[in-house]
Image (tube, rainbow, N blue to C red; front, side, top):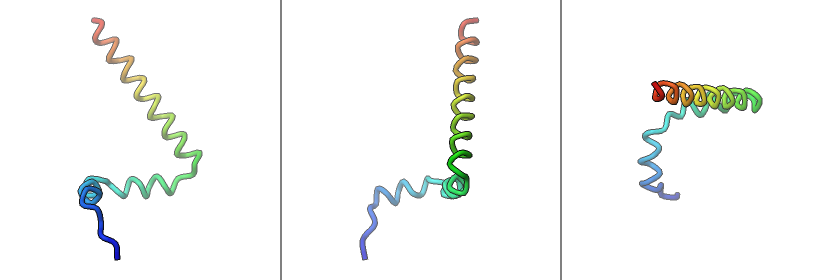
Length: 55
């Protein structure tokens, strides 16, 4: 029986595994589409931040 690494165990407490399982249920295409949407949203936030800073 192998011992678990205390550092890994500390990180695991803060990981929502339900989100990982939900992602793994999706197809590769669905995961890529979600990533694209997230990137588009992040870019929109950047543009909005720049525009509000220019005022």
